[in-house]
Amino acid sequence: MRHKRLIWQLYPSQLLITIVALLVAAGYGAYSLRVFQLSQTAVDLEARARLSQDYVLALLVKNDLPGLQSFFTTAGKDSGTRLTVTTPDGVVLADSDEDPGRMENHGDRPEIMAALDGKLTPSLRFSHTLQENMMYVAIPLMQEGKNKGILRTALPVTFINSALKEIFLKIAWGCLIVALLVALVAWFISRRISRP
Image (cartoon, rainbow, N blue to C red; front, side):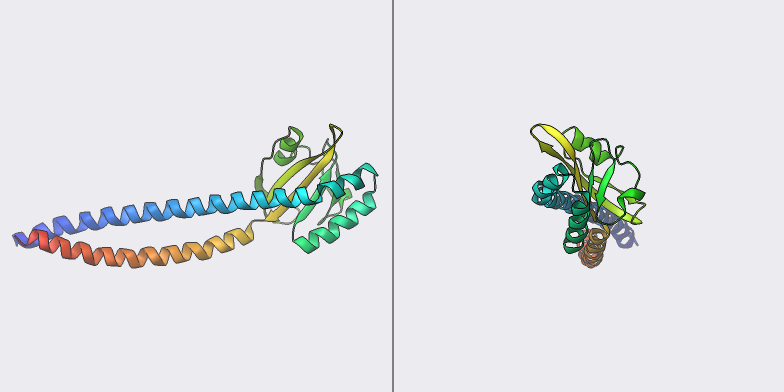
């Protein structure tokens, strides 16, 4: 009886500590992976904006709005990126996914306000236009020290969530297998300790 009481005092506590540590490690790993993926997406969006900024600025300076809209429609479709250009005060001039005339002023968007201050601040929020969660990055279009407009790029984060969901599922299965192995090892150790 004493042997059974001792083993059931040792085994559950060892198992609980190990499982809690495993869950904490898995949770932190999943969180870190999501942060990394979102950070990489923001870097990618900035690179896409920088690649097209000279051409967009040239069209903007010439006030070629039809040419700008045509370029956005084609480039947005080819790259899978939503492209938007606004005036410094937020009026939408062209957009790859929506008629600019039907879009509201974007001057209050966080990424637009950050770009006006010369900062790069990615924004993650739900798009009512596209009905999905998007990440936005905006850069100022400067010419001779004057801000001619704001170029914004955006990508849906649904593909990130889908990829992370698969990874999290693999992590969960891995944790389950490790937990089972730990349970067996903890049982063996508890028996060895309690036997004397």
